[in-house]
Length: 287
Image (tube, rainbow, N blue to C red; front, side):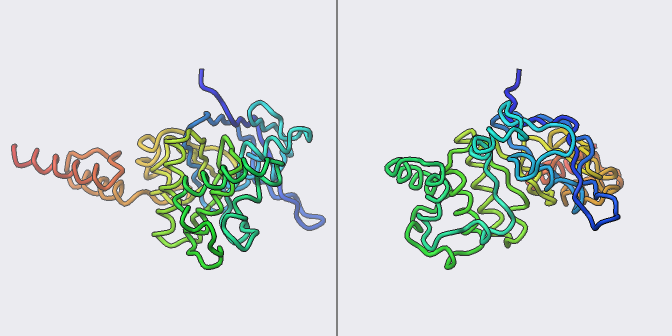
């Protein structure tokens, strides 16, 4: 039986509006389980509920209806709040909002210090966290001198130093250039594979979602699709109907199929797509 780290059951949430207006429903009966050690992408357009769902995963928001459990702890139970936030770390869109110190090592040490971790252990955690994100040479740098991708990696190091079981990245690459996005994604993928940290990636980028083990698609405050990238991303018509694009590879393969080529539509990576096209062309030559 899979070991569940985060579970929601009939989760509902509405944002308050001006007096006299009905509350704005953001989540409407979301039930899902996230397995420990997995890499899950939550995909959806703006307003789909994906970021609201993310903020429930470490009790930044609390349910208006239904329940959220983190390692079996109810997020509405105040006695568990600190432990829940220690186990699930959040990385937000703008790294400048998470960086609190003038020196990189002090920033990464901030979280463990607040948890009351002994000084010697903090030193070990800071060094290990910076090494994990490939930023150990910047230990004495001022964060404001770093690039966007480097700042976001420092923000991730600050979360890692708290030794969470799960990291939730809430549109954490949205403000970065392609190079910075790649740095951050490579970092979290390595943390997932090498350290077994559960990763929940909130995104609207198809190429990012394709890296995950599993994709949950949100629309209208509900989970409307759930499966592997190869199961979800080729569903071009359904994804476009809810305002999402499909990977360029999928679009190309659909076009080739319409032109009579015998190609699969689930060759998601550029390499897989190229191999599929070469195979189809060879098949035609051998007819």
